[in-house]
Image (cartoon, rainbow, N blue to C red):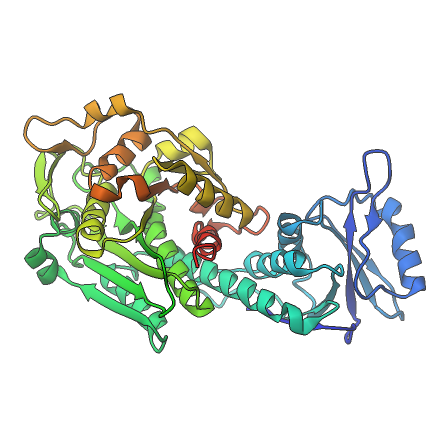
Length: 485
């Protein structure tokens, strides 16, 4: 991962990056004033280049200018849009890609640089992310970025927070991108254990099949029953001494989803290694909160299972008894995520009794149908909680949209043979959320569900996103958790 250091004056001037912003609808773009301005000759040359380079100043635009024998030897003009955190995040990602053949670059920031630094660092570290299981092919040369700011010491905490956020997002991407030939419930639990080792005030418990059976986690056992790799329930608890609020995060952790006996067609199955992206996000966010020493208690629950086809797989029409005693009828074994989440939510409400309860899940394809590929669907009965989480998600550069929980849609959950029907056909993302709500008990008005199937994966390069897993949810959760201390 890139080394990023803060400096007061440029020390290495092979490649100097100058930010450019739009200067109004009727005026040309201009260089952004920075804490350490370039020399008059360099500034005049860069200003003269702007119209020739046809820059608009839009976030992520990059133009390189060679200066043989000059200092610096290369000028990079970098569009930062409005100059806010989002613009700098896009700019940082574009710079990481454009400068991949350089060993190091120097970037100059405006005098008031806290917000811009956070965006730049996250963009650099996320835009340069690569997941490869082969040594073939070239690797980027870019190893170091110097960032010129007025007061490096004052901005060191901002750099640390941005780096931690990006590192945890990259961890969630790594976990999600890992092929399911490697990634089963036991493997995932082992990765969490390794990441949590030697972190003060962080506690881990992993339940295996026997403990799950003894304690009545019927949904996790049903979904994981068809696989040779038994299910797990990871419970990761961050307990700082100064915490005043207790949050439980729950993440769906289906390490591969065939659809079970209700088997998926091949096009729908080929990316099902990503069906544990919710678990990856909540685990990574908790590890990030511990690294940042956020003063909020966080208990993360990751119910892990492989939904496979075998003689021991659960069947459409089976009745499942969940943790706490509620039963559900499932007529579609491909609607498995809500079954494992139901157990975890019921356990959280009955045993952990937190102040707030949030779950993230790659739950339905209907999420993408309703909102496209880049928005999560957020459900909650609590207006303030929903608004706070949406604001944090947006500030972090992620996207979500609040969806309704219509009272009359509850009738779709009716079953003749069980307490609930878990897989009704109408309004699939909404009825899935309503099903989960039945397991939140007294926490119903302090619960948020996010269906993040669509934004968990990117088919193209866009801003700080690379192809593959996005790590969606880590940044938004960390931004929100930081407000609860």
